[in-house]
Length: 326
Image (cartoon, rainbow, N blue to C red; front, side, top):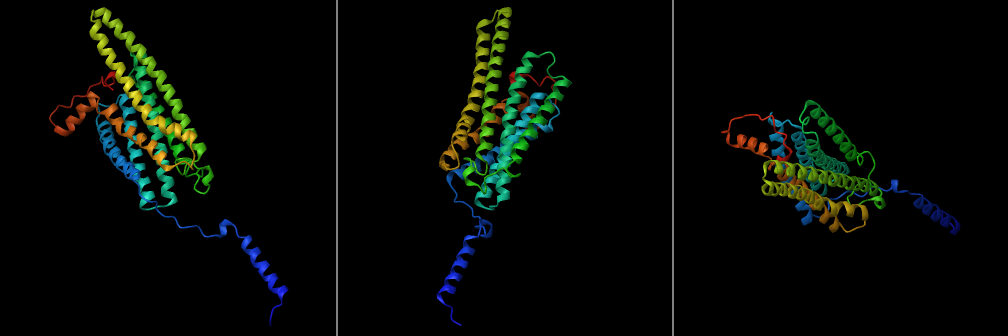
């Protein structure tokens, strides 16, 4: 039976209404695809592999040697373990972008990076604080109470870092809300701003602590030089120690400051090139940390020589907490 014009028009209107009533949930999601590989991705992947190798040696050295149990070495071990996990996070993030892309892997890799880098910054702050306390409490430094306080502080720092990394997987992400994305997807702008603000606060504390350390070192060295009548040589030695502290702080600042400022000022619409350019120095800090804090230490060097050569006697030294060696 033929339909008249009014019936045809009514059917067209009903069909249009059904189309308009469709919500995004009715539309099947677009399949996820891996992004194109860039030289920056390769650089981060290679950095992750190097970071894992460097810090794995430090972790194995510290936690396998009974002579390296002073608070300072616990902090260096925490720093090395955090940087090792950061390297693993970089490798997983590369896989999530190039090989096995999934939302779960992306959230997991970014969450691991956030936790590891947060713990790394906390450990650096702990090392600086330990140096400060070793100078102001030289008589009680290295006691059982100091060991317990160090372990408790590390437990708190790692718990806070794990919570920061778990937030994206718990729903605080921008996978389905591009407008709230930060320069580091899938972190939201608020989350990344919180992390960057925490870094700036940590940097301010480290500056203050290092300034106090320098004042104490200068005062003590001057007093010792006056007693032993060796003022010129004492000044030279003190100058080197102050220069070392300044170099360590400058390295940390130059590696982290560009990304911290960029993360506060930019958003998800900013060019990815700038994100890579500020993120690579952060990975460089994890590469430099073992060289600055571990491999320069005479006690760690001795344990490494024993492991490599098996020719030196194993003589544990209980005075392995000298802050000047780190």
